[in-house]
Image 1 (cartoon, rainbow, N blue to C red):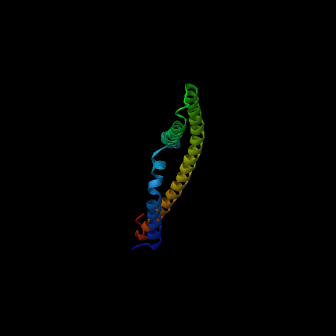
Image 2: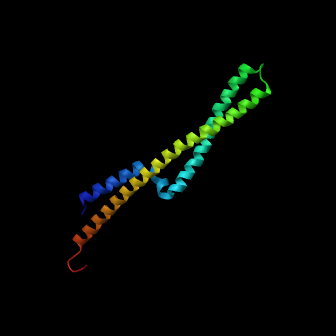
Image 3: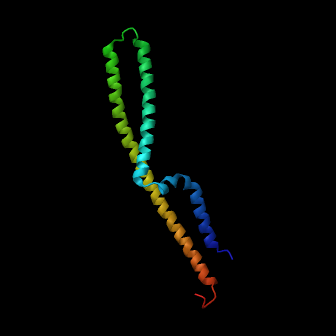
Length: 139
């Protein structure tokens, strides 16, 4: 016989896993430190690529307008300013992204704890149903 409350509970769990499951996979497989390190590496790569594209675009625009007045001092100062800008940009970008990843990990762990409670409640329903179906004296 189907227990209507148990079916509702199982449906709620299945919908949660379908909706949130893929997003919560890293929280199940990585420790917080590993998760944050992996995200930091990804963010360094993404931030570097973004900065490189923007920097090259700015350099290209400057070269288009200053080709006749280009000398070694302007070239070196542009490189130094670009590297300094990169370090400053990367520092703030990584701080921001690290905070976001940490928040995402903590929220995912909180959701996983809620899911674990749902599974425990479902398991308790199964045990209660087993006790009800078991003939007396068979404990």
